Structure formats: C-alpha cells, structure tokens
Image (cartoon, rainbow, N blue to C red; front, side, top):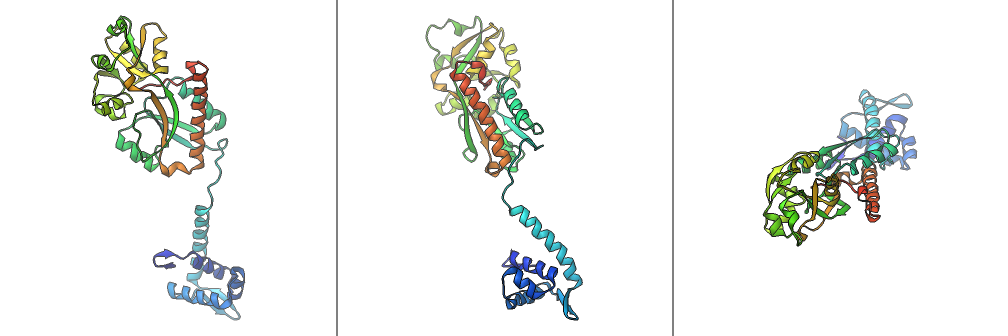
Length: 324
C-alpha cells in the first residue's frame, strides 16, 4: 500500500502516475519541479513498497512492467476520483436539477402554506420533486435526519432538539375552537388555564407523544396535563369531529380561523400560559453545507416571509393553516 503511518500518500501516487506515463525520471522531475535524485529516491521507495520494479530498461528507455501497467490505469482513476471528491462543491442549478427532497411536517403545513411551497418549487425548479411526509417517532426522526433520508423538518413543538440546526419561520397566536352552544361560549371573562383544563380536548397528537405537541409540550414545564379524549390523524377531519361535540380544539390562529369560517364554531383566545405557536425549520449538520439544501431552506424561508407580510397587512389567509 502507498501509505505512510496508515495514511494514503497522495504525492507518492502522483509521482507514480507521472513516472508510469512519461517513463522518464528526468521528465517526471521537471513536471513536478523536483530534482532527479528526489524522483529517483521516490522510485526506489515505490519499488520497495510494491515489491515490483515498476519501470525497467529496454535499450535506452524505461518501460512499465506488467504490474506497472496495471497500476497506471488504477492510479489514474483513483486520483481522478480523489480530485473530484475534494474539489469545491458545484453550484446548485434548480432550473436543471431533478433532485427529490423529503420534508417532514409536524402537523403544520396547511392548505395555504403547502400549495405556496409547491408553486415556488415549480416556478424555480420544474424538475425537482418534493415529498411532504408525516412526523415519525422521535428516535426515527433523528436517525433519518442524520442518514440524509429526511432533508428538512417544519416543526412547531416548544423545545426543538438542540443538536439540530434551526431557523425561525412564523409565529402565530393560539386559539381555541368550540362548537356553537359549547359551555365555554357563555364565559364573560377570558379563558383561564384552570377552566380550559376542565374540558375534554380534541388533538391531532395522541397523549402518548405529548413532547412533540406544541400544546401539550407547553403544559409539561407547568406540571399540567389536559384531558385528550379524542385524537385524529388528519386535520381535514377536525371540523367534522368538532361539529356538535363537547370537545375543545386548540391550535394556531390561522387554522382556527379557517375552521370558524363556516359559522358552526366559536373562537376563543387560548389561556395566556400557552403563549404563541412558533414554526421553524430543522435540519442536520450533515446537510448544512449542501448548495441544494441551502436553496431549499431559502425557498421555504421566502414563502414564510410572504406569509408574514400577509399577516402584517391583516390578510390572515396569507398564513399557513398552522395546526397543532
């Protein structure tokens, strides 16, 4: 092996390739900017390491041995691969790329945000494919991010993993949605946390994974827990389950307002202890320096900026259907 203390000696490999290509110690020395004795010593070292003369005399010239001929093509390919591997990252051209990205959404990509993402991708990168997939279990999520199987997470739980990169996207108020005639609609004072906790709740996050819930995750530090009597896998089901029920659904204001538009529901301000619902991007360090990944992050940030501008202008429709 052409190694020194277990490390590959790339300079020796390059000397070997030039020697086998030029079949001349003097020309090799000239091309490398070395003296002939230096190259002669390198040739001797190569012969000792490989157990083969590599170059032998034929009349007044040097010719490769059989082993030398085998090495010439192998070393050429090896050095070319190393050069390609160690060269600077190429620029990402979204207009020409056919890359596929996988985004995990923590129940927050709604009817407004998701179409905007797809439209932006189609406009800038018509051949790029984006798959939006549900949130896996926590350990699976971490493993898939590290392995590169997942590119980005759009999260909204209170305590994102510290080992991941993070960038803020949006921040919205939290609202409660109840059916018309619900007992909470008779309140004359703001809804308190104690009164809210007395109710039965509908959630898209089951009670078994409360740490990833943007609502229940806020209750954990307070030492409180709500009573989730119904959970659903899809947000499209929420209005149908909520209608005519005694349940309370607590979520980001844009999605709550979207539900309430059909007139069957009443909106209430959530207890102040719940704070606001923040949305952010999460990604692994292994993806951070990828030009393609940087482009995707900027695209999502751009969509979020448009939505924030819509919120400032009072157009709540511009915000994502931010759900729990």
